[in-house]
Length: 134
Length: 406
Image 1: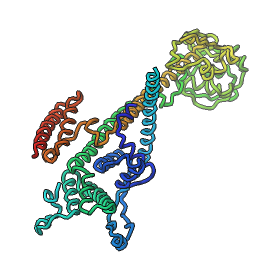
Image 2: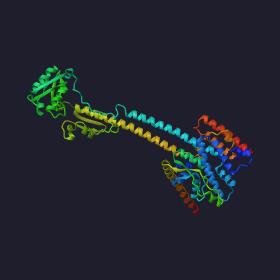
Image 3: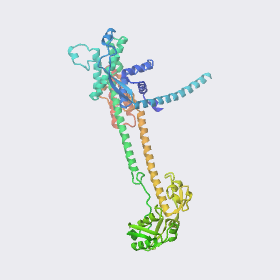
Image 4: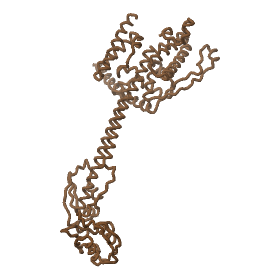
């Protein structure tokens, strides 16, 4: 329980989205926003140092891959938008076996913590209802 | 953070032109790189990753309708202050260094435990050696019985053989023919031997191989009144039955009556249909009524089980130590502190004067608070506490100046 409360929820969020498959930093911010319907935003100022830490802990691994331009410069110019620059690379992150294990542990701990809190809330809610009836 | 403060391209100033939005990105990255304090290769990788992020973010913001300048400023503001981000990176790095030190300590503990265990397990009295029971040699040592003998007999009666050997060892030999008769031997039994024997034991062994079943102990002897008394092993066994008790800690050494009856002269125990020995385990005591040579093996067997039990206990201790190390390691992993929370969960990393000077009021307040809190912890060394207090003082000063508009 103490671990669930003490540990940073952002680590769980990042590990969880990487649990779905490899992603690069900017894609992680977009995926977190998409999965939370815009409710949660990961600041890149927090995300990148966190990724660095997770990598140093061996929970994630990374590889560099060159970006293939989604559209040609001509298409982008026609649309009035900048094209993705050629030769640019992205750093892709994926969960390591250790990271997968950590994610499972974090999920279990989080659910146990949630159940514990829920048990108080349901008790409090019924008590409150009784109090209201009285 | 502006391009004027840390220009990424000195040529910009020479031309006198206003910095472009892309120069602002470069300037921000230059500043971050300078503050990271990491090896060049690591700095370059961080820069490339953040630059890629910024370019994509700017592109998306432009698609959403912002002009490029606004998009760059928005993307940079999302990344925040370069000094703060550099500090987060440094904290992540120092965290992994701390973990490395802790892991090294744990490894050292495991190695020490392993060495202790290996040394313990490889002690001479441990089960790693092969231990065999050594029967008492010759019952009683006597120099004459060690003499080398020439055994040259061709169909000689057994009586004559003993007489010849008696002459060679210069000791009288009294043969009890009745017990030997029960084993099918008599004074007329013909013996053919053509060998040398080193001592009386070797002579009896040669006889045993010719007359007995070759398993040993069919013919035995004792030295009594400076004479050698020869009979069967059974004869001497029955004369030498002894009742003895053995103190047993069955928890420490799991010796059971069954085990002894299985391994120590199985044929002799009453429980196995024999008539030579009996034993009963009562509480912590093992009562054994058996010939002395049985007792010798029972003692050896119990000692072996105790030695095994000691090894088991040491192995258990070692396993417990290993489990403790694993738990500790797991707890350390569980306590991993994310960089943005390191200030609350760990000791804040050192701040340079330049970093403090670059802080805004809010950041300075946050850093001051983190250092004051950490300095109040009991497990902080006096040196670290002094550093934290000094940095807190500077942060407070910076906070005051930032609020007054400096």
